[in-house]
Image (cartoon, rainbow over all chains, first blue to last red):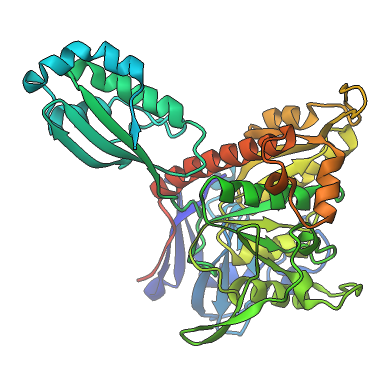
Length: 102
Length: 385
């Protein structure tokens, strides 16, 4: 299981770049990460296979906080804070897709 | 001060005579010690920074080997290896002392640490209830303390807080003044400060709380208690994989979890679930303990393997996690437990007492290994550019 070693919020470009301990790196736009928030409010209470996308245009990322040993919490400018993004989930969200295969 | 035994003296009697010509220097001794491996950490004791107070004068050498835990099960082996390494240098007199400086093993990406003065936090957990988890937690805590470490015991089993009974604590926590107000001072029993959610509940009343309430109570139990400097904090978890486990995995930097299981198949099925939960939250399993391994008949002395024996060992092997030991089923555990005395405190030389002491030593060894890994871990950097 890959673990992030660096999370870089590149404000000017509106992206979040995660570098993993296996050397791989993923880039997400802030809208993309906010949109795939894993919390029950955003995804519903069912164990849905399909990921739902919640559109929040021009959302800003205010704070990045680790949660325990296994996840990251983001505080968004729309006041949303309930998503706990596990490392595995973040990796599976990587827009490049190959992450999942590697 | 531990001097070498007679045999060493005899072997080096000749060297003693020509002690003036001994080739031992600070450098050559250090180089020789550099060939002595810590048997658990698989690195040499010089690189690990375990060699302290080294003095070399002629053929006389004195040093302290600072172990990573006072409960180190491998002192004798390290001592023998040091003797062997220094023998060729013409050392005539060796004073070898052991010290211990427990290292922290809180691994992982988390940056929030509610208990910075605690070096190692161990969650004692199980897949199901009734496996003797609290008994194992209490005795492991006392065993680590007997080995010379400073240990605390936190009872987080909100549904059945039994640690106050097992440790014989009747008093309530006191208050202690700290920098910014007051904190709770845990009562000390058998040399171990004890805190339990049971102290705050009314007698015979059930806890009927939903997640958020629980989380709040647990957080207070973690952050509002003045533990002082601890080498190890042993946490007695509630059974299963629920809210309490989630709160701990999110709020604390844990060193690892010890899984307690009885050996029968139906119990082991639940242990797999507990293992899988800890995997998901990236808390390493530092060992498994098999409780109620066998019953010793007080009439004939025959061992009866009531729940079949060895199941937890097999499970540990299949998980690839260390097995810490088998605890027999003896009525003395129950009898002393009911009196508020962990069996280890009462009968340290009984087979059960020894089993707990050995399991605690193996656990401490595993935590030393974990601390070595934690030191080398890259950690998580969060930056904004």
